[in-house]
Amino acid sequence: MKTPVAQIDDAVLDGYLVPRFLGYVRIGTAGEPHVEKTPSTDSQWDLARLLVGELRALGLADVTLTDHCYVIARLPATPGREGAPVFGLLAHLDTSPDAPGDNVKPVLVRNYDGGKITLAGGLSLDPAAEEGLAAQKGRDIVHAGGTTLLGADDKAGIAEIMGAAEYLLAHPEIEHGPVEIIFTPDEETGKGLPEFPLGAIRSSACYTLDGGPAGELEIECFNAYWAEARFTGKVMHPGTARGILVNAALMAACFAAMLPRTESPEATDGYYGYYCLTAIKGNHEEASLELIIRDFDLEAAQRRVEALGSFARAVEAQFPGGRAAVNTRPQYYNMRKKIEEKPLVMEKLKTAMENLGLPFRLKPVRGGTDGSRLTELGIPTPNIFTGGRNYHSRIEWLSVSEMISACRLVIELARLWGLP
Image (cartoon, rainbow, N blue to C red; front, side):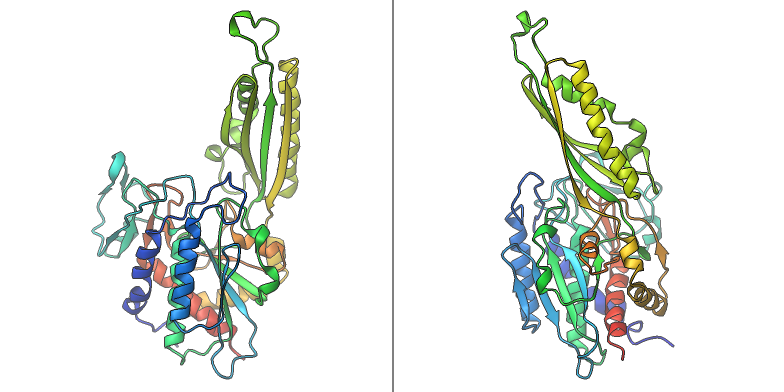
């Protein structure tokens, strides 16, 4: 027999979700990796304040905006379910700086005809090449115009949480326990969680809505490190440089060339880790580069970190008189082990998906979420799909029907966590 959540009409949830999503993505919230403050960009405050206003307008009294742009709100339990465990729902405010994120003009396509969609800049969405797009024929999608990303990562997650909260408040017949709502800054830059107000969080478990196609769930992620290599040379006029000039820019280029091409993002998938050069700059006197290291196996990630020191020494040997130094720091760790230590979190999620007839597919996330860091802090936090595709790119798109499925799943999770 269908649960009451499974019987919610799609058109009803569409009305809760689509207008919100189209409004949220128009607010540019790209993070800035080279700014140390949290949030790294003032625009994230704009979305945070909007969400605080919307949450209060829904009737929630317990809504907080912290000094570092964390939104924390609490949906009270329905009468009789106050003693149920508190569980949380989390999504992030910022978008990736990898593609332009301002002046987003989302395009809502109702009843997609299954054809090729031409975008600006010679780009397109072609169902013959785009995985999952052909299956959306006859359904609704949202895409960017080709000049910016769309921002479904993670404004789809925000819209799904907000839509679920509004629906639960409007339908008290769906009994549930207390639900904590958390929106965080700077997930994409990896700098938001150091300021996370852990002491204010009541959830014993949490779920991020920050995934991809419907049915995909993620309980394991990369172990992640950030690294910077700095090079110091000696300057001399090129005309009289013989035996004196040490070109720091060339040192950086040689270091970059030592990164194994077979261990790069474009050469790996599945459980294979990589080095990824993210920035390089410099001149004769000083140069630097930044890179990230990713691997599901912690020892393998640490071996790559150690290899960077060997590369630096090799560069110094090639450039007598020059200096090379490497600094590294961990960003997040694989969350699988800690999630598996508290199996109830995934049991609830699996039951919810079975109740709704949704596919259940565990896959490793070749990246990380705020859930990775929150799990480290003691709150197990698996990642749930949102319906988006091609994140961080100008060809990003979103399935509305899958967005509806994610919202319905959140509502069912609330119901299950509130059962006596």
